Image (tube, rainbow, N blue to C red; front, side, top):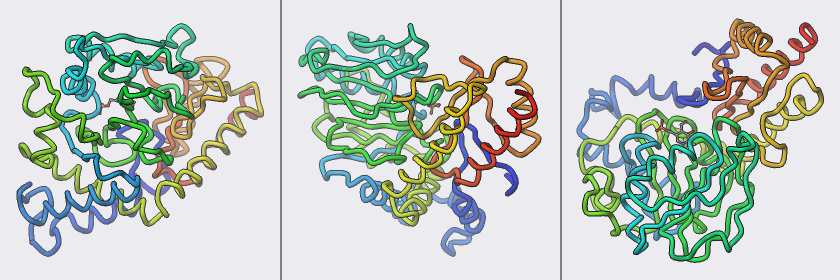
Length: 363
Ligand SMILES: Cc1ncc(COP(=O)(O)O)c(C=O)c1O
């Protein structure tokens, strides 16, 4: 991507430019070995160091307690929609698993889980086009459940939990795919957090799973070996050939994030970027946000124009000006600006300037 293009794609998404440059520099000759990172064994000591470094950086960035494992697993985030009930439903004698449905991926999470547990959706905002996050009171969280699953940031709509449900002794599990490491979160409140790498961490196809140790060891007998988190933890993510390149890139992104000052620092930048766009949206009737303001997150800014024709024109002209991949998800249409950690304020300013100009010319 040239310097003049800003990539607002929802994922795979832009990565920090210094990370891309470093990958290019090292690609043909990893640490003087004369071979590429993608050519060395996942069991080579050089790769082992890459893996351990990435895990350690993640642990430092999140202040992760010692009793949590960090796994790199196959199949992206969606594979975990099946792996979670396979690994965890057995914690409950009835295999009861609780889900909150706040968007398309939240819906897929409970749909994919159905073959493996007694799946109960305890709150669902589909009737209002997923425009908010429902209140989850402690009474709604039945204490004999294996876990409660939420989608902490809803990528298509841009809504997020600004506070998390109190779940008593039921482990809280969050799909953080579209917001991992974008804001400070107390991991000790969660039994498990997982995310596909392709937004805030690295390439697609692999996920990171952060899981409390006492939740390992409950997998159903039929769990495929490569979906078994306990096995993955025992083998430190190397049961078979891991996606070495994805883990390497993730390590570099984590190093970059540390250089930016860590999660608290990037959270402030993210808030400013989102505010730039939401202030503009709130200041006019021309652009309309798709969710209620109090549930806005900072990663995905989804909005509509007065007509689909104007949206098509907006996307075409934005593309011509180097504002790439602003089309909303195919299930809802409209416009979506994904502004993950790697998006600089300058990209958001360029988009805001374009939006103001577009309204002036087409309002
Ligand atoms: C919140 C959320 N969960 C899950 C997924 C699915 O991720 P993957 O394509 O890695 O399976 C996505 C993809 O965008 C997502 O945004």
